[in-house]
Amino acid sequence: MSRPELQAPPEIYYDDREAKKYTQNTRNQEIQAQMTYRALELLALPQDKSMFVLDIGCGSGLSGEILEEEGHIWTGVDISPSMLEVALERDVEGDLFLQDIGQGLGFRPGSFDAAISISVLQWLFNAETSHPTSSPPHRLTRFFTTLHAALKNPARAIFQFYPTSDSQITMCSTIARRAGFGGGVIVDYPNSKKARKVFLCLFVGSGHYSGNVPRGLEAEGDMDVDGNEAVFERRREREKKRTSSKRKNVKSIDKDWILKKKDLYRQRGKEDVPHDSKYTGRKRRTVF
Image (tube, rainbow, N blue to C red; front, side, top):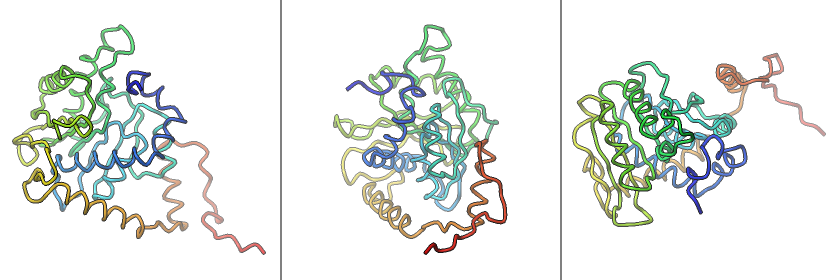
């Protein structure tokens, strides 16, 4: 089967049907979670501090939910209206923006502490028209230049993507360096066709988030980016924590919760939000 990015532009490929199908697929959820946890390892954010993270190509908010569980605040951008609509239906906590990253990011300089992107960068390699501004180098340049400006100094950005050739990897890293980034490419399991994963690790400035590019994983038992404990052991613990927290932290739907959600929908420009009244959140009587 042809790769999704070769079939149609993302805003067309991920229509209402495909967006819901992708989000509800348990295999997609598992892969998204694994890649997000790995990206967080490579980000090496402070353990005791909540950071403001940009989720590039946030889709329906699967990665954003993990960022929330890890104690971070996030904002997401995506080009698919259907994906963002699914995210709103799932009541994700992050702010959402409809945006084509190939045209650049419209955030203020120094807005974010870090950025992650899961399975998105490969979409920028396909030109939709013959116009020079639609060429992959132009779109990548615009994206990396505006991303560099949107990140604080110092900061780190991690991209997991699926290149079709080494030339695409070279193009990405070269254009990112021209935009002012440091860093390089990380390949997990380079000798495995199925498990091989490519990450672009980018640095802004110097300090805790910069330094040497972390090495890729090669087998179970590899050490994590800090060299403290096995990566797979940490992932198992995180999965256990995530599963138990979902069971315990069941949101109580009361009047305050409903009012908070309605205010959030109004701020996001959602239409047809019911008006507040004395009946808002009132429990209905039992019908006999």
